[in-house]
Image (cartoon, rainbow, N blue to C red; front, side):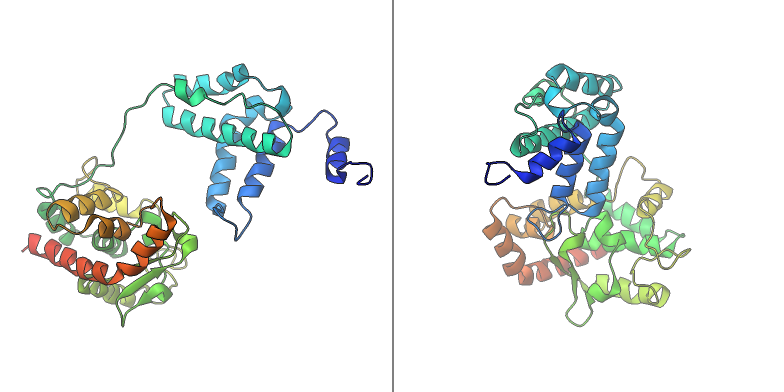
Length: 320
């Protein structure tokens, strides 16, 4: 077949699907490609499952069995319109983006010649920008006092306190393990596989953060997880564990766990006058320049250690 200029893999595929690949088959192949381990921009298994689930719910019922090369722009509208009508504009944007990516992959592989989803994002209804509720400096002293006096799940309470000090993301906190903590040098090393941007992060720990961990070790020290569930010690606290503490304190709609990052960023930049690049490195934000990004995370570590203690002392003074 090669001598005749034929691609054996393509011949095999055409025998299996003489009419061409279905949208669902191409989508699954695209997801598998994006999930290859140890490759650039490799998706985490949880993200791969989420992408497949969203397509399975929203796109496959309409497009799944269709030969990808026969799908038209009107077929894409048939998927999007019901989502838009129910007001789920963010879902519509996400689904369109994923359909678009499937067609780009299909063109790359020769399964189709055109992308009927191209340009449709320009005509989606605009959605209002929603910011995570976060505490202002004015509200912070009362919140800290209420948190200190909170009587409830000690692990979830400690997780909220630790998050305030480290401004880490919810899952970075939930799935943190004792082996990641260097008590002697006061560092928390998060492996790349658990970071949103797939880049390992070292978080300097203040004396207050270390004190929280030392108290917690008496409770969850037998588990791999720092913030282990009190019910099932081999599991971390639930996804909504910290949020439930905030709600029970009476701050529903006023504060969120992710909002702590916004609170830190505002105060660090405007009140404490930390250098902006160092603040961004502390928040593990994506930097467009990869060289500059690596430089920030490595070189700013000492300065971030100083900032971590200044931030912790600032919070402590607010409740005195």
